[in-house]
Amino acid sequence: MKFSRDNLIRNSILLFVFSIPFGMKKFLFDFPTPFKNFYTSEYTSAFLYESDILFLLFFLLLFFSRPLSWWREKLSKFKMPLLFLALFLIFSAFSLIFAGYSFFGIYSFGRLALGILSALAIGAALRDNIVRFKEIAVVISVAAVLESVIGFLQFALQKSAGLWFLGETVFNSDTPGIARIVVNGLKLARAYGTMPHANILAGFLVLGLLSLFYLLIKEEKSSLRIIQSTGIFVVLAGLLVTFSRSGWITAALAALVFIIWELFADKERRRKIIYLMSLLVVVSCSLLIVLSWVIFPRANFSASEAPVADRWSYNKLGLELIISHPLGVGIGNELFYAYHNGFFEKYDVNSLGQWQPIHNLYLMIGTETGILGLVSFIVFITLLLLGVFRVFSSEFLVPCIMLFALLAFGLFDHFLWDLQLGRLMLWVTIGILLGMAQDKNPA
Image (cartoon, rainbow, N blue to C red; front, side, top):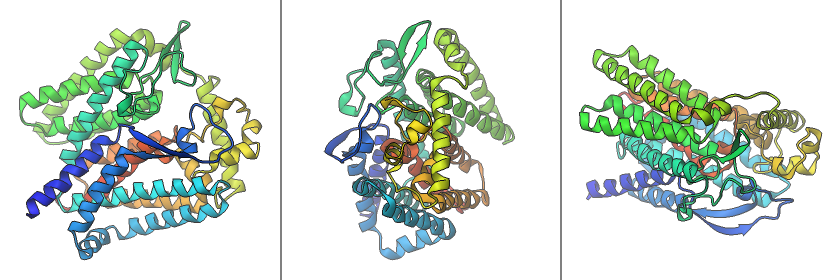
């Protein structure tokens, strides 16, 4: 009986992880907010996501199948990280006192709490060997390949692929507010997959690419290595047509760290890493030859171009807010506080389409939950990684690089903090490391 019950929990966890990139949701109601634009539906409305239902399924199965003593035993091994995670949650809740839009603040806090709860539940399941990291890596890899196929199809068609029922944004290259590039006067829509923005797709594909690296190095069967190699080709193609420069840079650095580490491993792993290096060179050169006409213009950037200039303005705005409001302006409220208090005009962010959140994970946390909230989050992440490094082995390498990749992404974007799909990416990755930290025999 226990075997079938744990299998049900394992499958529900894997289904939840697989659902992360699919933005299927049911609109519930609008919050009273001062404005709406192309980018703010998740900042102005409440939704029920399919991932909410799947999370509730696996959490209830896990919770009611284990006594409270089991939970205490599993969570007690995270003592110091969890202390600062609890402080982070407390400071986030405390910031609601300062929220001008309190109902949306409460909704945002609830979303954060669900993300943290998913991390704790996945961590506990990993520690009890209900689910293994290799299984999670397979699921992320399959989802990344599917997203890449959808993304490449969107780029080829220059419009959405008709998969709205999977959460796909409906668009074409002329849709107002759609992420696009301009090459020799030609407007080209960037690949979205089933996500609300191309940058979010790029973030997930980096996780998928690292998962495929892990599986390739672990695999002994040549037939499966061929499948994994094909998957790497597909995911790299999908990543390229997101035209996310932060995604390209993050993927390149993550691959470099992975390769350098594995080159110092045993002879058999070195042989596989040399194969991976050769594969990456061949795949990258092939894709560059075919797509060079759009990749090279996009690879160039200057401080004066709009996306870079806007990010710089958002960062300056965020720093001023943190200094002037050290206790935060309320979780979920940075966007509307900046609007009401003239910060957008002050930093020359004057059009409706530019009224967006600060494109920096850390400044977003600091402005909304305060300096103490930001410090608690950083200390929590630091202690978590120290717990992993104490018993570091090759099994920890990919989950650690995954987290570092997301944290690097956080320097240039906000989706890990305030958008459902990005939030789940971050907290599921944290949950994986919680499940592996301080283990002597990680799986």
